[in-house]
Image (tube, rainbow, N blue to C red; front, side, top):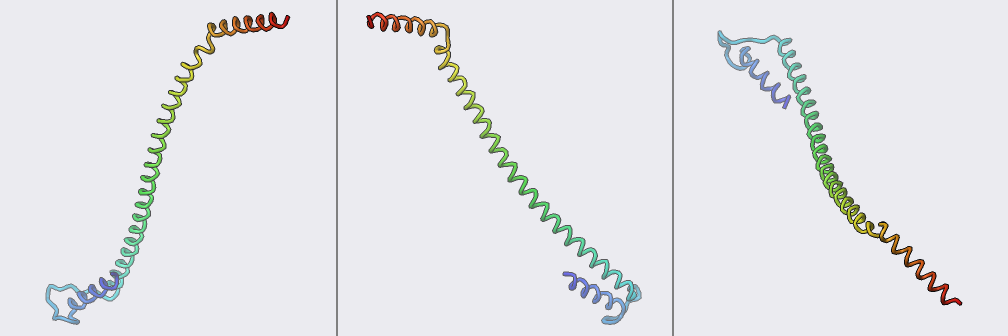
Length: 126
């Protein structure tokens, strides 16, 4: 791209200078140093453009990676919320299931049953 622009620029510069075409009274001529400065400026601008394009592509890759990570995080958060919900349900079921077995009523029934069974065993041993 740079070479094409340089050749085109030199062609235009020479045509205004009278090298290829006849010169006009309104035409502008450039010295060799000015042409070199313009060519160097074009090179510098082209390098800067290439660097910026590389940076843009790297930044786009980083953005894509962060979007992918964000999607993964959203899935993980959703699964964690579902896990919390299921654990809360399990806790509620455990409390309901074990409420009778840990109550005073069940303790009384166990005590009476243990006394009755042990006295029956003792009475049958005689």
